[in-house]
Length: 116
Image (cartoon, rainbow, N blue to C red; front, side, top):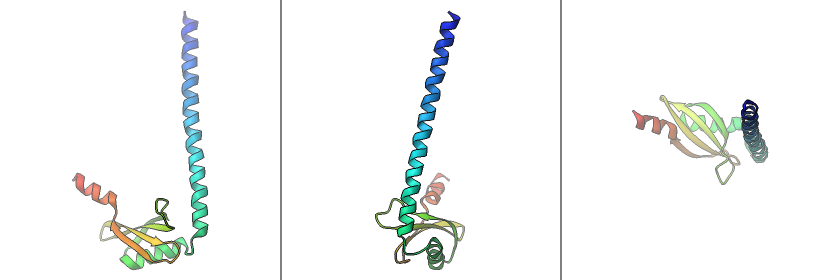
């Protein structure tokens, strides 16, 4: 009886380990795909990340906190988070022209204020 329980326990542990390993490998595959997509998008940009940051800082008068390609936009855009007056502003910069497309308070700031 004890050996049957041990076999069942070992089988369940093996199944659990396989499930965790499969989920991890799936996530790693998605991350690799996202990296490839970002590299391709970045290589198509006509301006550099530094130029996008500079445009965002000049437009807002703040300092850059974080910058990345916006992979949700339909066109090539950089999303730059700017800190000004103790608030985080999200600035969208066109990846081809360097023009600032949008400046808005970061959604996370607004949701944090709602919780107070």
